[in-house]
Image 1 (tube, one colour):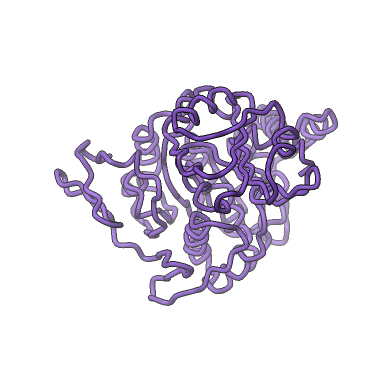
Image 2 (cartoon, one colour):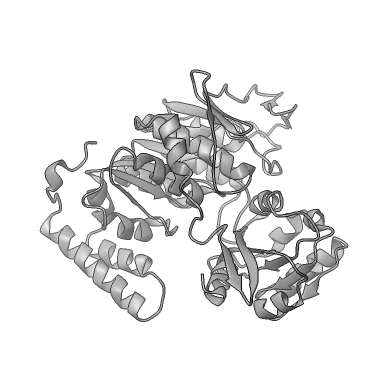
Length: 415
């Protein structure tokens, strides 16, 4: 699709009314202190015009980004890269269901590109509405067990929804569930982005057989389903492009997972005509994403704020924190946005925190305390982050929290 020529407004009177009403509802929500208002604004707008999402996207070259982990950061990196080729509109704050996406696009009438994070459950529907030029699929793992389907069912939903898609699919060749889901599409660019968490990918999504995983490779010995040859790859601190050229990754964001996100982002940018060197240089400008990775001053201490929502996310986060004896605050809630089932705590290898002074806060701090006790770790349960910071030994504090606990933490420390 071509960008909106000359900035001409393509919206019908009904669509314009829906956009205006949605922005008004969002403004009221913000004034009442109930957040950004993006979700309620989108809901109001879609109630007035159910086809509004597609109308708002019709002048944009759209890329959708979906995954269990890393989609907010990858969305931000892609948006930064595509900014080299024109104005970008994006749901940068992570409101990734249709209402939030609609609110974001309502502010992008002059944009050329739409870079949209999409919740895994809604990917197929949003793709039908916005006719994307590209779709980035990063990973699938267990998450929000009371709300989301089992991972194999999510992969099947993706596979069915994307079958025959005209979009270029940029997919992680190292995740068997992603490969199976993407394989129904005729135009796939495979990226070797890695897969640290493998516990959701030991059975073949195609036939149910046991996956063989020698080194970085994987295949099913029963049906022959196997890892495709990637065109793009993360190789240490470099991105390898389809021509074999190596481009340095110089992110300010920490960790191997973010290098993987940058690799997928470079492949997406190339699909829109932005060269890897330009894309990666622009990604260097990103210092934090919606508060994630920020280092803040609180009670005369430095706190680094880290988000981890599920076992795969916690595993990646443990790999990037400073070594012992760096103090660590862990905060877990189980509200609606988190998923109310905390059984996932038992899938996380908390023994990786051995040697760290650990302080536990959050609504479900006692659930987490039981898990840490079984793991044989020493820790303190605290009522507030203030108490945890007061008790923590000297040095920068790593504060790791799941979704709503992270938002609580940001509000309290003034970030």
